[in-house]
Image (cartoon, rainbow over all chains, first blue to last red; front, side, top):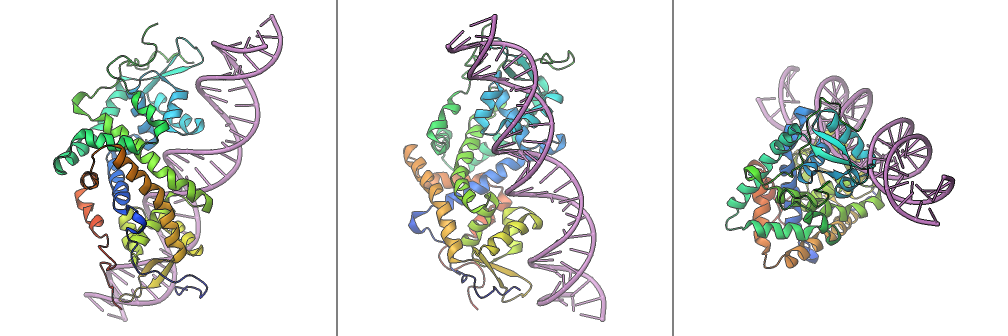
Length: 177
Length: 177
DNA sequence: AAAATTACGTCAACAGTACTGACGTAATTC
DNA sequence: GAATTACGTCAGTACTGTTGACGTAATTTT
């Protein structure tokens, strides 16, 4: 049973090399780094019965208060139904509130509550700590260096999403009304 | 219905700032970068009816041919049952073969077939291309800089896993027999 | 003003990946 | 000979994601 059934391919016993100039080292490091990067908040989320999806929603609603459901879907690149369940839970648990859009009353603007902001901060804290430590531990690495590299890893068409980050308190849309 | 039921928290209208020294910028960039980084292979995998889990197994079996099931579980940080389905499919489709461990016959050493190696390479190619482009686009960033930063992001206890990477063709264990 | 479109919510059905806990078998170690 | 180990497998469950369809209120087009 363990001996392969005489028609299968032969085992290759040599490790895959950097042949063809493939950068396996960084590919693998990216996997390990992201795995551990997300493990910090995962533990906190478990106490609330939340998952990674809740975290992402909470993060972006705190980063861009007043964004609409459609905008959020675009940033997360998931479907309406996927968002619906998670968003409903966050609203029911009073972490997020919806307000009718002032210009277009069909839209729902999403805002964090004090509770939602506190949780977003609690989730971000260990991640930020890990980043700071990594910057220090890895020697004379400047923050901007990492920032530029990560930004360059993002699809060019989607880089616009990153720049939507609020400079101050302004918010890109309807600060008035 | 859209007006929150008078007992809910008030909306916070200001964006979360870098208050408390939280590095939201890099946190967010890491999310976007990883999302797009994994989207390349995801498209190829879909053609085979495989998912991201298959990719990870295939990657590590190619990187460390001859690793055992237990070692693989340890690297991936998933449970036996999670691995079982995925591994079975990869074996059934002749991407991976199992050989009885020479020292301990209870163990199954995992090896890629030619087919499995080819797929691993095909999946890694676009990711490597993206990394190279990002290194170039982001200016005078050295590969080693990014490598050191990512390594520092990994939990110290788990950094040992990274170093298991074969230097050449050797393999850390039983190259003989 | 009527018709078309848009923004959102929701229902149903399903897939992939992860989990826990339990049990069985062959091989190794005590 | 008994205990332990490595692996496979079964059952049941949870989370996050998918597609497709339908309904409603609000806005835009004609």
